[in-house]
Length: 115
Image (cartoon, rainbow, N blue to C red; front, side, top):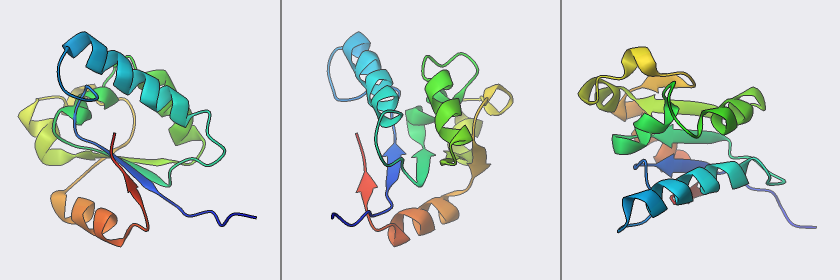
């Protein structure tokens, strides 16, 4: 029997990888969708920099993120990033937090996944 370890997913871009924008957007959408199909969900998801855009009302990932949130995954959005992108009123899933809390979550996490 394998031991389950809680993990955090940290997403810092609305795209996965570097290069073609459309491919990167499709990859991050697929990554989040595949998270919903895992035997073990992340304990938390942290969205910062361009990743914060994935939590808005118009995000192509919104349905999957809402499903994860409803399943108990805590979703956090960087407040400075939300201010920078002027999206605070557009956030549709998760809660805004600050860099101090983000650092603490990442520092104390047993495992961090960053696509």
